[in-house]
Image 1 (cartoon, rainbow, N blue to C red):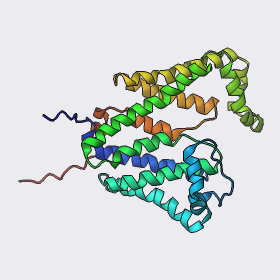
Image 2 (image 1 turned 180 degrees about the vertical axis):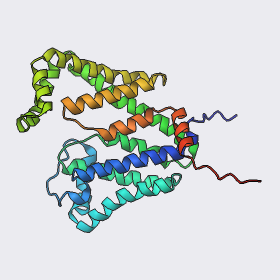
Image 3 (image 1 turned 90 degrees about the vertical axis):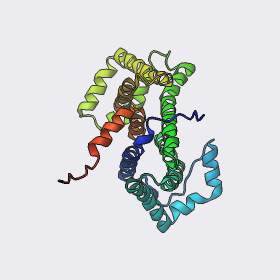
Image 4 (image 1 turned 120 degrees about the horizontal axis):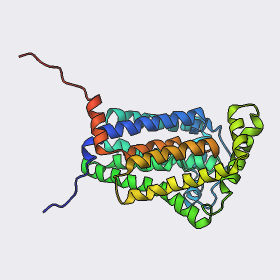
Length: 288
């Protein structure tokens, strides 16, 4: 007897692939706007690996100077990053295209982290979201897509656990301290804006800031529920939006790449079916 479970997402592979690839292209365009694509790094010479083994191996391999120091190679690398998601839009079932894009995207993430001298993690969840498309069978894709959802829950849930372990949850004024540190530059450079006025008012009412941050911590903790049931996935999406908005406004952290793939991983199979039916091309009616 074959006891292999068929995922409900298996039949929605095409629409999921296309929407995720559109999100990837938008994220790359955002990076282009931020001048952080490989061809925009202006042949960097400074790099940082820290204690990250992947970054260390990347530096030892010597691939970094080749990808960023050669204008032609960096332009081809950047072009390939846009080309393969476009190809997957046209051919969503070609798993080999996803494999190539996954490898290129991972190389892009590591290259960016090494040469901006900051270990950004905003793109890693998106990279995990690309992995299921490497499967040749739709049934395997569906199971991998569900697995990526659990990783998304871990990304947010683990931050809550770390705040419990390291004491941020128990330090009452942690919210105010973090906010002051993160917004200081903006307030100094933009003294007359409405946002600066809001920051000033909140600093004068520190209890609101501290309570608000504790609520954001609890919103992160809600994602641990996702390991046990899908029943509250809509609540998790709302929690993710709250986390994104508050951290963008008050912590100067903008992780739209992570938010987008997180929402897609939490959407139900019924939502994908409705989207597929909405955009499905109807066959012309032939009169008999």
